[in-house]
Amino acid sequence: MTLSASRLRGDLHRLLDHVLETGEPLVIERKGRRLRVVADAPRSRLARLPKRPGFVKGDPDDLIHLDWSKEWRP
Image (cartoon, rainbow, N blue to C red):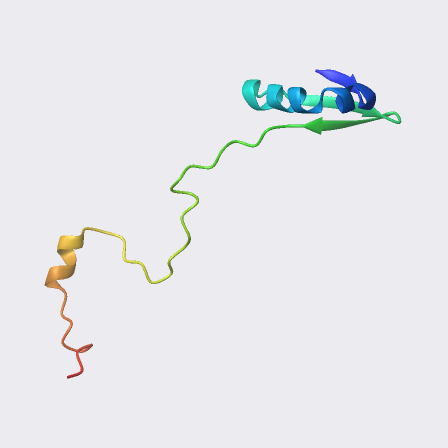
């Protein structure tokens, strides 16, 4: 959908909602140039988790059989 900056100003909220609902980019022409408004793909909940550098990946049952005697300090 291509429109002028004046039309964008009048219908901004409705047009932005349309981009979010349909995924169709919005093209605005201003002073002979084009601007595009495109919705980002939403990130998954797992992708938003903070990074944990010391985190152990794997089966938790494997941790039972690790030798922790070198780490133990009474």
